[in-house]
Amino acid sequence: MSARQYTEEDIKLFDEIKNGRKFDVDEELPPLYKKALKNLLWMQHDSEYSGALGYAPWIEKAPTMQEKVIVAQIVKDEMRHASVLYRLLEGLGEDVMTHIEGSELGWKNPEDKAQIGFQRLKKDYRVNIFYYGINFWEDFILFNFLMDRAAGHQLEDTLDSSYLPWKKGIEGIYKEEIMHLAHGDKWIKILAASDKKDFLQERLNIWWPRVMNVFGSTSGRSNDLYVNLGLKKRNNQMVRDAFVKEVQDMCDQAGLILPEYKEEEQPTRQ
Image 1: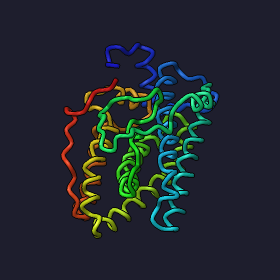
Image 2: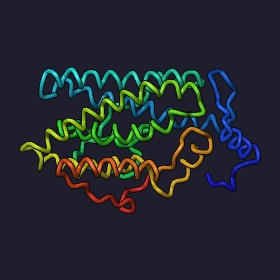
Image 3: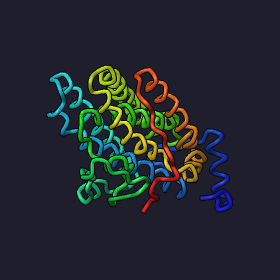
Image 4: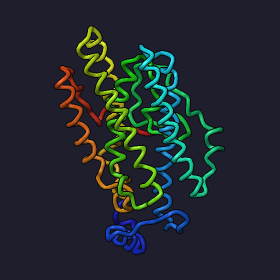
C-alpha cells in the first residue's frame, strides 16, 4: 500500500502511534491496524508451529544424548512460541485450531536442493523457508545459525510493539531464539574445524538464498505500513543489512564463504 492510498484517518492513526499510542487486550482496534497485526501474528504462529514439526525428527537423529536433549528443548520452545501466538490470535477472534487442523504445517518440499524464491506452496501463513526439509545435521545447525538469527533480528523490532499483548509475549520468545542461535554458533565452529567443513559449505550455499528471501523483496512496501503502525521499527533493508554483516563476520572467523545472493533471480510469489 502506497502513501497516497492512506486515508486521513490512517494518517491520524500513524501520528498517534508515532507519539506513543499503544493498544491493549480487549481494546477496539482500527481496521487497518487489526488487519496488519493479524497478518504478522498468523505468519509468526504458522512459522513457529511448522518449525517445531521440522525440528522434531532431530530429537532422535541428533549425534549425542546431550544434543538430543537440546533439540528436544528447542522443539518445546518453538511449540511454546506457537502457543503464545495461538492465544493472541484467539483474543482477536481467530479460530486457530480449525486452521491448524485444516493446514499441512508439517509438509516439507521433498526436493533437497529446491530453491523456490518467494513462492507460496501451501495455503498457510508460514514464512516459506519452512517449506524446506531439514535433511542433515548440518541443516539443523544452519537453521539455528541463520534462521534463528534472522528471526532474532526481526523479533527485536517487536520488543517495543504498539500492541502490548504481543510486546509482552515476544520478550520470552526473543530470549529463547537467542539461545537457539547460540547453539548454532557453537556448532558452526565445531563443524568448520572438522572434516565436515566442505559439506557444511555445500549446505550453506543451499540455505543462504532461502534465508535471505525471508526478508522479502526490497521493492515490497508492506513493511513500511508495519513501521507506521508501530508493529516494527526498521524496514526490511535495515534489518537485512544488520543480519548479513553479523553472519559475514562469523563466516570469516570460521573460514566459510558466504555465497552471493541475487534477489532478481528469485522466483516470484504465486
